[in-house]
Amino acid sequence: MAHSAFARTTLTASAAVLAMLGVLAIAPSSPDRSLAGSGIQGDVDCSGDIDAHDALGVIRLVADVLPVAGCATTSGDVNCDSVVDEADALALLFHVGGITATQPAGEGCAAIGNLLIAPTATATEAPATPSSTPTATPSDTPLPSDAPETDGYHLAPVITGDDLEPARQYKVELALIPGVPDEALVVLQTGLIYRVSLDGSFPPQPWGDLSSLVNFDNNEEGLLSVAFSPDFAEDGTVFAYYTPGAPEDTVLARFEATATDLDESSRETVISIEEHDKVHQGGHIIFDDAGYLMLSLGDGGFSGDALEAAQELDRLLGKVIRIDVSEQPYAIPPDNPFVGVAGAREEIFALGFRNPWRMTIDSLTGDVWLGDVGEGSWEEVDHVVAGGNYGWDCFEGFAVWEDDEQCEGKDFIDPRAVYGHDKGLAVVGGFVYRGDEMPELYGWFVYADYATGRVWAVDTTDDSDPVQLTDETFFISSFAQLPNGELLIVSYTDGIYQLVRD
Image (tube, rainbow, N blue to C red; front, side):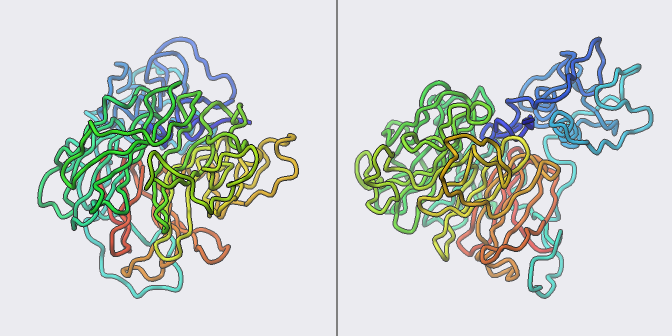
């Protein structure tokens, strides 16, 4: 099967720029695109080949985060609009993934992969912010409908990218600080953590620095999640999941902290998880209604789960695990589904995941939902139940991926929703909406695509089709839920936004 260069090997999403999804690490199986000569449209690293590295180069150029080849500003302007921006990166991602790209060519603009007889329009200095900015406040609110209106929503800035400096780049999570109104932690994949004011009362303040513990060389590695203990006010404990660097094991650790500071020296390892590659680390920490810690884990890498980890009960890769961290280092909850099962790791809550990126507990029902980044064709949303098997790598979405003896005699749970790579490349799980401002969304699970900026919602009470809420212009890496149930959306390289009705 072909592998989409962005979503597969995936976040990251970290994903293109998203280290979490690392969607750019594996190029797809596709016709030979190696081209001779120089000055090729789309060849931003001057290698003579159009591949995932070119898309990543444009993303880095737009974000102004890493050096790129000098030819990026000419051959990187693949739609010839005189600026190298997100539209160029997306067109290259589609091209590498074997998807027909919508490339609105300017006059004399060469198609991707064609030799440039003359340089295309030279890009101006690429802005780090998206070219289009959502409206700051919603317009007059219409009466709610019985269901969400397609494309009837937008993302209103809560904190702009400029106001987030130096916490603007590499954001993978926004964690609300317990007991402190309007304050949150911005978690950067680099290992840096900042305290921010959601009402703008102060600029970002350093809160913690785990950069000496994490590896950020690959775009799926780094600090991937931070979560406060449910009893933070009493125990002052936070948890972090990070990658020291392949082939070292990934780590879930606990730290002592206050609302304004992390004690890095207090680190204690809770659990380490075997790894064999730099990708598919998954990595989101949440606490369920019983106070148990849940952690989503990817299959650990290699195309098609080559080591068959996701279906093996004696390994934690490709699983959601559930542990009791009230004991040292942890204990097994007695109601975990594989307690007492011969040959099974008792930490396992559910299995059969490829690279689950962002998981949530429904604040009303306690149900678990997540987005699982696919391999070649399909992104999926899963309603996760204890003991459930979600199919990877026997299935990708509803489609058979591999039919061998490891798939025989098993009951797999279908995804609640899927979308193909014509719609996006790396799913980002969100939250079940439980706010008051948009009652038509009440009880719907809201999720997004990292690469395209599309946001959807799916009704958690039936099997109706998803509804697209909005189509944005920036990389969406994560969600957060305010105490009142309203939803915030995090851009990997720009600001923090709130989902609102048009």
